[in-house]
Length: 431
Image 1 (tube, helix red, strand yellow):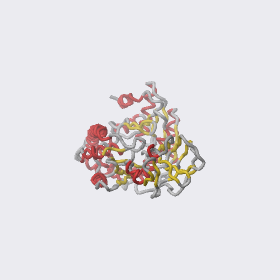
Image 2 (image 1 turned 60 degrees about the vertical axis):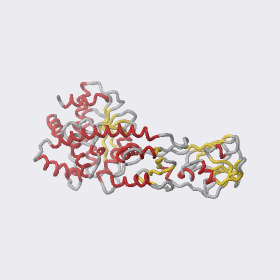
Image 3 (image 1 turned 135 degrees about the horizontal axis):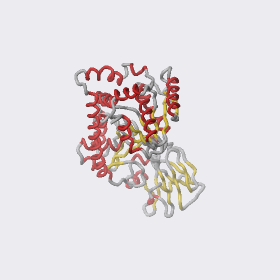
Image 4 (image 1 turned 60 degrees about the horizontal axis):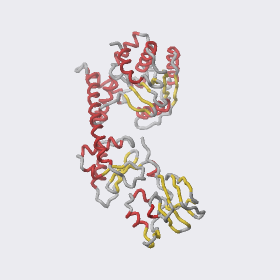
């Protein structure tokens, strides 16, 4: 099968996309991918094709690469977008550049668009080894997926089964020109060391090493699918019903989680947490065990990159974004009824009363509320009776008239008859 035919078979599921976008660096791999798509466009009815070049500004000649890409695209009558990004200097320049690049790609594609990138079989082998040497688990060793969501569209890698040698043969056969990034020869970068030193030494003994390693990545990708299916089944069992129902925070039933083996707990939590935070490494999972096994009256916290897990009411709760930013509890917000935007704390509405003397405050301690038939009751005790998680209490809006506490948001039994104080908290942030 020719390279064009093999590629067309891979691309068939994406023929109804609004646009096909190509990540074009100007190097060999992306140049060949662009050329192949241009050739297929002459044979088949395909979505509109556009190229996207990201200029990282890390090389003195980066502007020349953008011009090179412009010339390639003009020759093929393919529109080109050039996106310039700033790369934050940090411990891993490779990682920082990758993050900036993919952020630019995400911003460039619209709903349903497909972004094609030119990673190939040799890249897949390098990725598996790179992650293996870092101690990755099955999820990491599955290496690069053939497709995944990217913003409002999709990222697709159609060349993962194609060797770099095959791409180079196509380029030379058709007289293509490309640019060579000099940083690809710098051995202080881990991937370059694998590419130029480790893999050639391995292939001296195992000539088919790259293909075999890439095939192992495919097996591990299948294993990851099975683990994800098991995690999804376990998560259905441990979801349960959160209380209170108005709280928009992800949570899981701790007792049901404990009934799983430790390995299945970690598998389910990895699946659950991947929407909210970069996943922790193996050593950091001790934080989960500490939270899970803490004493009943403890208030354990497991802090992760994107937020934290807390425990309350036999559940584990995910908190992130505004939920981790303390409120100004000393400030009183004037409120005469209707709707009110609470800074950093969602929306509040009041039905059944209006009074220019109302205000909204937060707990500072020592508050008391007068209840019909029960007299003056300590607010802390009332919130304990309502079994409200501790992390909610500091954010719970309180309605005052002057210095008198009248009502507590979302707790109808702690409000005068006919008065409804409804609070819509902010949802957590995701990655």
